[in-house]
Image 1: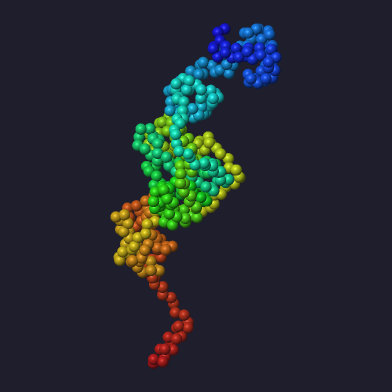
Image 2: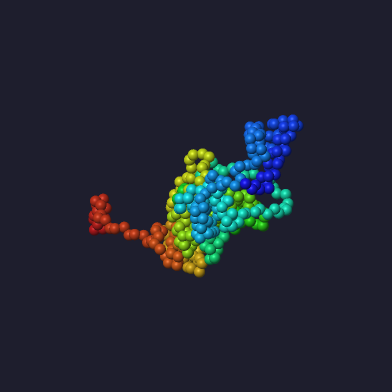
Length: 423
């Protein structure tokens, strides 16, 4: 049998160390330590040399196929499936599909070696770059209960292939990494963020704290790189303050590491799933996410909380309609209309105030496009998206006349006495 140069060199090293042990220059345990073997294995080499001579020092496994090697037909089938259907999947995602959809139960290390060996996947190489000394950081421990801290962020790769870019808005739990909301939006902005939080609060309950970056719809930052302004609130900050939710700002990419790793998993799976299922539009993609893939994603990437229970609290649903809305302030004109976005919203008269001319009111711009006008704790007008007045109970109106009733006996006697005196 023809042996490689490495096998011959190894046999020569074993022979040299063995001869030194025979010449009493080394003990057998020292010889075993030099070769990186146990004393028992060294005795085996000695016995094989005595029985078979120099050829006994070679590894007899050379030239024989591995006992756990996959059949050639299976290898060809796996490579064909990846080349034709899963060409843009990462190795882990492709390995899961082989088990779930094709009933091929192969080990992950085998698949990880087979795909680069066939030239279908390139090995990732980390390029060393000389950088200045970094700050020593520590990984932040997860919160013990779901609902104590939620993350919100957006990512903008090409989720639908070569089509235009969309922001992928995700709300996830810190304790379990469970995704509560995931949708493709045209742009991460105030309305989209309020809509995401309202759905989470309506479905799960009121959470304790929210972790986000320092985007302009979350915080006002006087100067770049400085601390955020905790007193001048954005619409998102005002909504969280009304609900009693603490907002935490991240001041570095490393602070958002848990969210970034979650996005890396989405970026390696979601575009491929949308392509394979033939999802053409954003509406169908969001439907697929809501009805199918969020549950599948949470099932694939579970993290157990350190404590049992939940920190989500109850909240009145009627309160959410006003809290999760844009609330600009306006001043009522002299004839009681309110000007807003090129629309004239006429407010009606109420029984507790004849006119509100010159008063400062709040315009509630709801997420579905409807409008409301609030004065203090009262809603004095409701309007459609086009500015047309909708029915609202404002306590308005003229006073109703009391119906006439029959005279009582006492009143009738008084009238009779008055008539007698007049006579």
